[in-house]
Length: 146
Image (cartoon, rainbow, N blue to C red; front, side, top):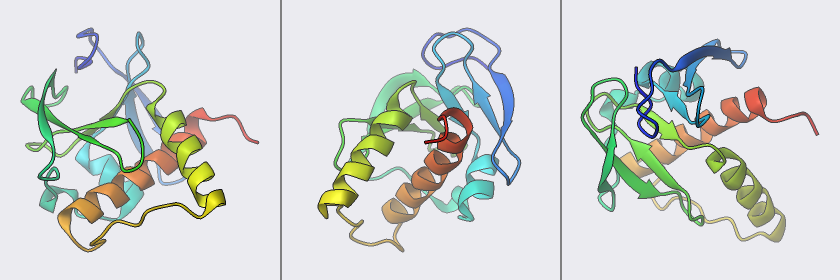
């Protein structure tokens, strides 16, 4: 697989989390790809039923798995753009996006300002819950213990 940012193959496969999800990490830019299977493992959500939010825009990046254009949308209450493949249902996180989301979410929780997804049972809510689960696994993998 080629990195959607650097275009350099191959992504390095790394086992992460106690659920044995295998993540694909770019050796150059350190972005991370979650295949639909990994998202299902870490979130328990049937990912193939999910679609990008209606607000998602077509990205200039291509999916490392199927080469179709990725869809991009802002993660709520952040400036982070999540890349999602509407075809094979994978998810790309650029280097630093995990840390930014994690830091912002912790600060928002502390201040009681965390917004809940309007319809957690809807497609957008399920996708964001999958993103949260993916971030949780990735955070345990890359973040040093506090």
